[in-house]
Image 1 (cartoon, rainbow, N blue to C red):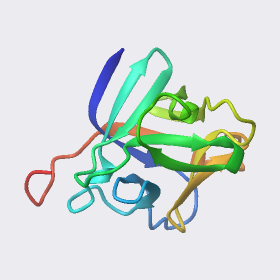
Image 2: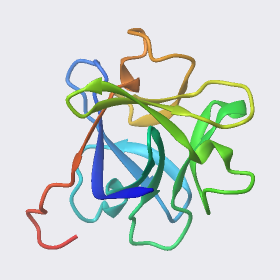
Image 3: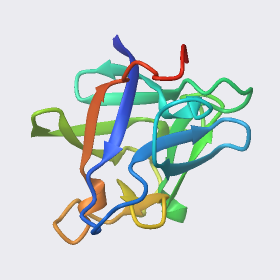
Length: 155
């Protein structure tokens, strides 16, 4: 397993004039949302990606205590942060489908039936699971890059 450290996931959803783009893991309450920037105080927008081939585990680097692993709760069609990537949290494993030039769709490998593709709504800042990564779900396309250097000092 390899680890890509301090990465940012940017939703490429096609809403006009999107307000929110960056995946934010909110460790203090285990929620996930899209936000408009990756600089402090939003430390949950930085992720370590643990890769085993095309299977990824995404770990939020948020500075506050709490759950850290992106979990697709397929039977409820939602995402959250889980305390670990094992045991009952089968949705913390994601199959990364490359779409070229650092673009990916992420499919939850959770054992329960339900929607599977990480889907961001860039207009409202919400994140959920979509049933497919087709063109009607443009928020399932993610740009994965190294985190930018903060303009406001160290993260």
